[in-house]
Image (cartoon, rainbow, N blue to C red; front, top):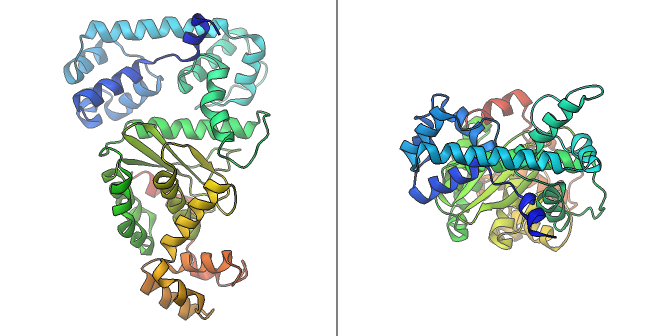
Length: 367
C-alpha cells in the first residue's frame, strides 16, 4: 500500500481533534456543551460528524478548549476536503457494499438511487464510521470481531453491518461520557456494589447507579436497543487508553439476561484487557467467552456459597431465600440453576423479572 492510499484509510474528523484537546486540557463535555447554542445535542453532532464546525461553534470551542476559531474552521475545511476525496476514490464495487450492507443512522432512501443520492449516502457512512475506505471499516469492525466471536465466516452480511452501526453509536456515546481514568483494579473494587443492585426491580432506579459505579472505574456504560439484524446482547472494548466501554442492548428484556451480560462484559474488561468483544450468546463459546462466563457466574454465586447452592432445594421459597443471602435477585439464581441443568428452562420463570420495552426505554432516557 502506498502512502497516499494509507492516508486515505482513516479520515481524522474535527470531532476527534476536539475530544483529544478536551482530554488534554481537562475540559468536560458539560463545560463545552453549555457554551454551544445547541447544547449537548450539538456537541454530539459535532463529535459524530453529523454537524460541521461553523464560525459560531468554532468561537465557542476556542474559548472553552483552546486554539483559535480560525484553527477549528481550518480543521473542518481540511476534513471536508479529505472526505470529498475519499468519496470520489471509492470504487463502484465498494460503493455497492457500503450502500447495500452497511447502514448509517437515519432513514434509508427507497427505490433506485440517483447518482447524487448515492454520493450523499456514501458520504454519510464515511462520516459516521470515521473511515476513508471499506478496508478500514472492515479492519475496525469485522476483522476484529471475527477474532473474538464464534462465527468464522469471512462473508460480509447485513448482520455485520447492523452490529457495526450499534457499536459505532456506542463508541460515540462513550467518547462523550465523563469518567475517571480506566483502572481494572478500581472496577474490581466495585463488583460487590454492582451485583447488589440486581435486587432493585426497576431499570430506571438501578441503571443510573450502575452507570455511576462504572464511571468511577473509568468505564462508560452505554445502553442502547440493538437495530434490526443485530443480535448482540453486550459488548466491551477500550474506546481510548484511559476509558473502557460496556454496551448493553437489553436483549430478551429479563433481569437474569441483563445482569449476567453485564457481569460477562465486566469479566472481559478485567480478564482480557484491551481486546474487543461483541457477545450474541453468552452461554457458550471460545476460551475468552468461557472465562467471562465463569467470571459472571462467580458474581451470581460467590465461591463461598457454592456448596450451599449445590444443596439448594428446587422450590420457589428456597431459591428466594438463597438469593437474599447471596445478595442478588432470585432470577439470577434461577438462571444458574437452569444453566447447570438442575431446573428446566420452562420452570419457575416467575422468579425472573421481565420488563416491557416502554419501561426500558424510559430508563435509558435517564442516562
